[in-house]
Image 1 (cartoon, rainbow over the protein chains, first blue to last red):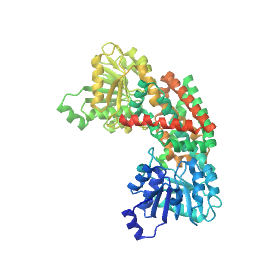
Image 2: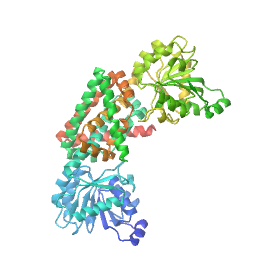
Image 3: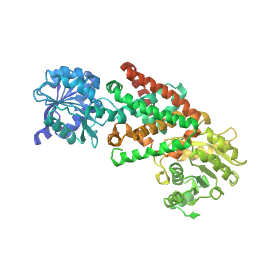
Image 4: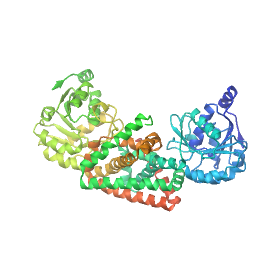
Length: 308
Length: 308
């Protein structure tokens, strides 16, 4: 295992006790790397261990000072860790939980960052041994970029981190994870896992599905037309391409693991789109104008909520 | 009619001859105001006349130094104008052309900025008198804000202005409008009107329709859920709300006047969305991942084309 000491960390560590002596990140992509950088900056962590399958990912995490140690071995990564952050595509979380469960130290807190919560709870919770604590979580933050090199410490500033603790989750462990999120800039909310999944199906999963679809529709166009779509993308399309540049495996897993909520909200959207289509076909300007006018209120709400 | 002289204009005007002594803007919203400000900054114009129905719009255009004169009367606005820019929702363009046609000075150039070109050509061209020149145009630029107060001179910087001149349009007039666009920062392209409408149906009209629809779907949610959608909008949804905050009347007219192209591309999109839906329902991760991976190439094209 590669080892190093970051100067920033050592100096901060001396000044006050850290929240977590050892933090293991299983997966060190955009979210994991940003958390590690933010926790280091705030002096919350002694040693950061990154666990990643690909040598290139481990090297990047190490070279950029995101992690002090990098390994591909789950057992080595979580051994002695006070906090384990599972930050891989949600479809892998159950298998990872099963492997690490035997190596968690007593009192260890396990959390995750997945965009789906019920399926993750169902897959991970059964593997968490007595004496360890599982605090399911999801920071509402990200960019279209992937990998540890995309991480930055400010990613969670003024964003929401949603925790969906189980009835049996230790309130102390939940409070500690909440405190960590607040210290790295996020606001913390609590929710039921299935409710989280419905809210996210609307605010995130459906928008991504639609963006992927429309960009796919455009990439099926003939060569000349496709080139023109790229050239004149500033008229609305490019915003969709940004969303549709997000990590494909991460998003595959989200749709496979939040199927019901996504299909339900997709059904409503499709009905509404069919109504729009009918209004256009009939030349019903009154209905179109009314539909377009009422959506401005939602935008105002977002600006007022400082999430714009 | 209100009159004023802007200092910026007079000083520039002295240094070199202007391109257009008098420019009349029929409609002085985001696009018209931005053009006026940019043309003033570059010293291209002697006097700017704004024609607007609402007293508040006229006052704003005048107070902000966008226009030297403001009137609600079309005849007064275009009298003696070397360039007339029609910058109102496209559904109004035919009626406006009919009214102003009797008052255009010989040699006057009429252009427009509509997001639909074939319908505008069909509605406007028949009214343009002999000796005047119609150069249909469309700058691919904008924001979600409306009104003269939303205008800024840099709006067209590194954006495309598409001209769709008719076979009978004077090449000299087309060249002059092209030069004006280049001087205020835009790149100029030429296209057939119906081809423009298909490209824009994909890059702009469908994305806006979808954004309006999804934000509408969200605003139909029950009160609590709707509040949460606003609160957690940073996860993708808010990008749609920005697009869906655009001017409702302008967009109503675009859909009514580019019906065929929009319905055709909407049909393709709906088929693709249905295929995505089926993959999710069947749990077909392979197809989902492949669909999500190929859209990254389009994003790369946009970044390379410097339109990101």
